[in-house]
Image 1 (cartoon, one colour):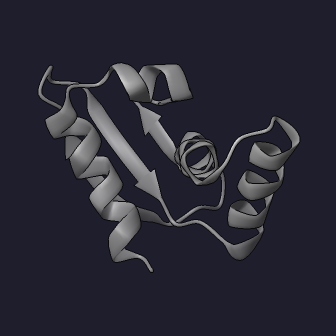
Image 2 (tube, rainbow, N blue to C red):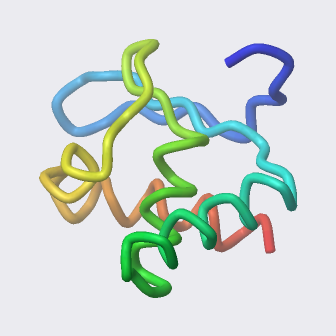
Image 3 (cartoon, one colour):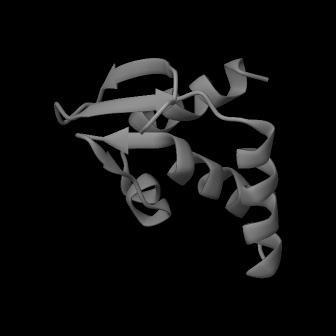
Length: 85
């Protein structure tokens, strides 16, 4: 992602490389707005934010891909978000 600071790089259980980028307040507010527009709540906002700030093997990840990750991988990615707050 252009002009974004890397927060953490992780190797997933299947060997793929995940990169988590530094977000902004604007990223968070956009994620909340998108979730609200689609009738979603906090869970959807977090997934949308993760979509905006995570790449796996150089490609942006989707919410569906995140949901299908093994729990150990998802938890590690989510932990990075918790540590930024």
